[in-house]
Amino acid sequence: MNTLVTNQLGSGFTSQGQGTRRKVMKGKRKLSPNSTQAWTPLSSNPQDSHILSDDCHAGLRSIAQAVHDANVQYKCAVSDYLRWRNKLRNRTGPNPNLNRFHQDDLQTIEGAINAHLTLDKSLAPQLLVNLDDGSCISIWKRVAENMVYLKSLQKPQTPAHLEKSTKRATELKNCRTTMTTSFNLVERELRDSGHGSTCEAILAKIAMLLEYEEAYPVLPEPTLTVPEPRQESPYTFHTSTLISIDGMGLVISLIFMAMAWSKSTDTPGSPNDPDFWVQMRDTTLTLLGLLTTIYVTHQRLSADPIAWNYALMFTLAGIACAILAVVLYPLVPTMWSSFASFSANVMQILVTLQLALITKALKQKQL
Image (tube, rainbow, N blue to C red):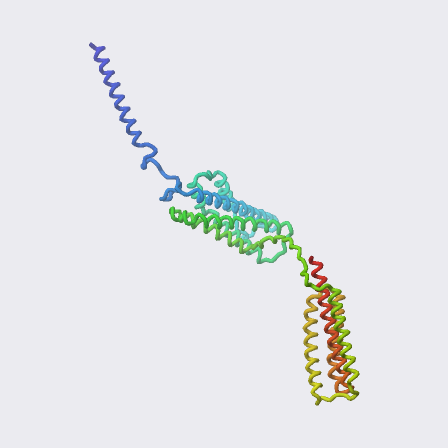
């Protein structure tokens, strides 16, 4: 009888225990991971960050990498400052003015660098949290201010230091370019998804990079372009052709001059003659032409002293002949005045020919 009662009690206890287990299991099913009450988003943003597109995710990775690269450069700048300050303290003692950076700043940047290295870039929420971090913004700003101060000193830099500074400025400029380009692609989606704070944090970092770029501007590297071979036009005169044409023109003008001389009289001219004022007009135009030609010749022949000396000699001779033509008109037979004016025109042609020859030589050197 006791055995029977014991078995029944044991059976009842077992059934009750099973029922209890079933109730507990049912409770666990209600608290499944898919339940809204039990799941907490990785990001504090009210919007789900995992719904960002692949392009936006790629843009965030690019921005995060650029921020990391910038932190590496800023860490070097802070380290250089602290190293220089320690050396100066050892020589001259403590200086209260040398307090732009401290050891805590270096630790802050190192913490940001280490946080990026341990970042799981496949998770958008972690990228957003990383980009929201603004602990290094003040350090970036002070680095730019320190560069402005150093530039104001106008002290000469050693080649090694100049190369290092230029390389750092170039790297930071590349970071700024990458961040700006990527941010322009993802800004709209980030703001539509409720990540406005992340956008403002990124813009703040870009602004600090721009401050450094303004403090230490870096010009773009010149690109070497191979000039295309230029072919002369088939209508271009050769040097010998040009000299031949000028020579023939001078010979023909001498023939005309000889014919005019044969028909002239030996009487001198007078200021009351119309031809005197015609001679004044020709002299004025000749002087103007010579001065204009020598001005252009000086620009072209400044690198060739010999050619410049010849051009200057022809110009001075032409100016003398042009003035002499007016002076001789009322004193001697008028043909001597005409011959002096003719000589001034010849000198002007020789100066122009000298300019044409040197221009031809420069073009051949460029080819």
